[in-house]
Image 1 (cartoon, rainbow, N blue to C red):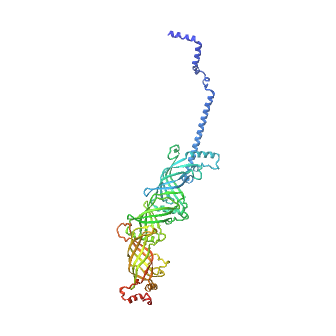
Image 2 (image 1 turned 90 degrees about the vertical axis):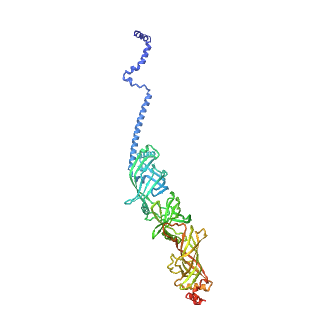
Image 3 (image 1 turned 120 degrees about the horizontal axis):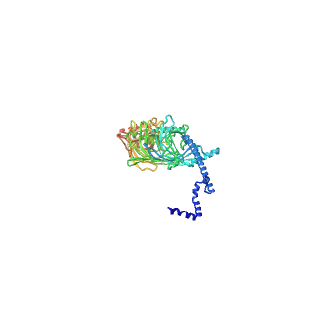
Length: 632
């Protein structure tokens, strides 16, 4: 080890100055680490850098303090506004903040008695959140109020929308006890929020949603409610919702806004809506009843025709459009059943019809109706005969309308009379009329007439029998003389001027029927003939003089014209009206069909039967009706 010890001094001695400097430099950190505290706190950075660092610390602290204060303010604001919103009742929100415009359009998608009515509703909706929580601008606001409200408005604008989920909405009357009217199911929807909204509602958001409506099966309750609402001029109902879930933000997004959540349970709200004045309707309220359906519906055209062994019908009707001009609705096909009403029986279903899809048009809605006559039981033909007889006599008929979509709903209406009154029997005359005396006068001949159905009634029928009831006049029937409402028996009182005789067979006369051409202003047309043989000609009470004058014209003149006026019953068989069930039917009978015409009666019409034998006997038979000096 000696060589190692001895070798150290040499370099120290040779490099003494340089080593001392090197040692000082290399050992400085070691010496400083053991030096006094004044040496340790010395900052090696320049003074400018130290000032920047201090400023950053100050800025960070101040910013943190501001953020804490802002967060505290926001929390206080949120708590304040949330507290206000939580304290608001659903009635306050509905009446003060929620604005609904419309519905502007309703499309009926599907109607089912079991499933309800699906409709797509379009309208506009919005929530004035500023009114709800009291942050809308007010000219009387102070400085702090303005700041406070402006922060609230900023928060609403950032929230922008709320999304709403509801359970089934039950609607009941406000009576005691309440009466259930309908339930409504709506999908989740979102409502835009606003503050300081403009007055023109341009800020409202368009909404379109399918809605399921299930009305009560007791349609009488609905009709009664509608009548009461119209009389009072207000629709007053209660709505009940089990749960209402409201969350911030839109339906399709997920963000911090979803944390704003409020859930309501067992929400009950009273709603009162004023019934608006409807075009074509009397003013609602004032205890005015709803006008009957017959006053609102006009039958524009009605057609019957045979098709493939069926009797089909087409009709066009108009109904007053009560909706606002901007409201639109589309519907699918609606089926209905039309029944005849009779005092002696229950309603008789006679036709199955349906309406084509329609839209609202002002001032009236046009309904295109098509259908067919249903199979009828034999005991239904008298009611059908009465219906057609009244219609052809220009008299209205009571009917009922029902729909399989709502089995409990039946509406009584009136099938309107045609205008002008149709003239069914035309060109009526008695061909080859003969009168013979005896214990009573007997008439014979062939009744000829044209049966012209009203325009639109293009049906195949066969007139099988007729039963005339005729007044006979000396000369043409005066224009101002009309037959009254049938039956003619008893005789009209007073008797028409110029009438002297009455002919009415005791039983139906067998008839022949042949189809003839008809013009465009009429329906099916037929030529009908029926023979009368020795039918009593009754001289009307107090009219022997008129009869005598008539016979005198025949005997001493070239003949005479006899006017005829009366009504006829016609038994017809209509092809295309199917029957059902057992039993027989004599078809339809059209009663009280009025007619007028004339008959040319010549000398040969006063024939002498073989039973009278000589001319003297014939003259004696007529003598009691004709003055003696008139007889040859």
